[in-house]
Image 1 (cartoon, helix red, strand yellow):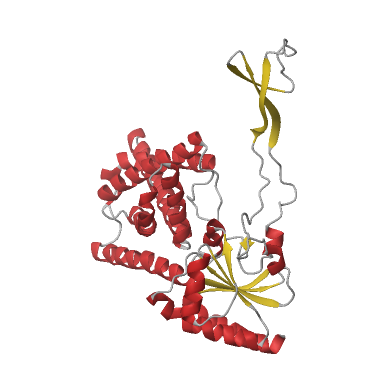
Image 2 (spheres, helix red, strand yellow):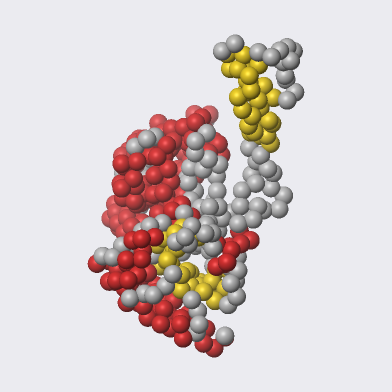
Amino acid sequence: MNLANENQIEMKKTLGLSRIIVGALFIFSGLIKANDPTGLSYKMQEFFEVWGVPQFNSWTMGLSILMIAFEIIAGVAVLLGWKFSLFSWLLLLLTIFFTFLTAYAVLSGKIHECGCMGECIKLTAKMSFYKDLVLLVLVLFIFMKRKEVASFLPPRVARLIMIVTVLFSFALQSYTLKHLPVVDCLAYKVGNNLPEQMNIPPGSLPDSTVINFVYVKQGKTMEFDADHFPADFNDSSYVFQKRYDKIVRKGNAEPPVKDFVIITGTGSDTTQALLSAPGYSLLLFGLKLYPNDELEKWGKELWAIQVKAREKQIPLFVISSDEEAAKMAMKQAGIDAPVFKGDAVAIKTAARANPVIFLMKKGTVIGKWAHADFPKAMEELERLRQIQ
């Protein structure tokens, strides 16, 4: 075997390995995000907010579903070699776009996590950027060799696999949007104690700060820290303006659950009171609960849940970002329960559907169900009869 043939064989092996890595990575990334399409939608909204175009927020769910489906479909197409010329172009354009987003996040410092691997695998903006650079190199390589790739399966079989992949990618997202993520990686998952999740994890590093002083001298603003006062500072021409803490090194001292605050109608913080109450309680989370036709679909089930809960002396509390609208909605559904105001971001994280009901016991999440699964919540209440 001559050297040219050996090089050709090695090139084919490298191309095959590159396709496996790229295809598997796109499928894996797509499946993780398909587990929680709402999370990607919220991340897109964060980018739009930073870019000053919040009017596009209403598009994010549709964009999220399409992008996730494309990642899975493209990954399978790359592995099969199906219509490789088309998908190599599409993958190249998508990877360039991802690299731009992560580069922007790193350089601007305005977005700390890109959501590239969903909530289950947390990647910082910098880690995502490096990952995308490596991915871009691999995609560029297979793009340049795209004419050398052909499907190893009969066209009919490859087409059938792609049809199944398309159906699966949309069906999985439809299921998780209706029933909550299959794998819950959020801090509000079943088994977690929320008061504990609101504490800073042991061993976390706080922000490293220095005190900076701002003075004005002869119309010129000057800023310095305590170790670098000007030599002529005793001059009375220095006029004090302010002092502030400047972060010189960002720490990681952030609790898993942030901004989780429950406010009463009078403006009092009742978070700890609710979470530390003895026995069981039900918390209904809804970002926006309105008295409309959609309420009719789950309002009767919620009413039955409250009736059953009252039999067991389990209180129901409603938490929404729009307190007044939620009160009207509960009135329409015949629900007599206290309505509290919660932070919109915290509710988005806690409840990936609208609404979601939590079964709590002394701050620990015992169960959580989207409105499509309220009958399961009722079953759990029935089960509590034997264990209370």
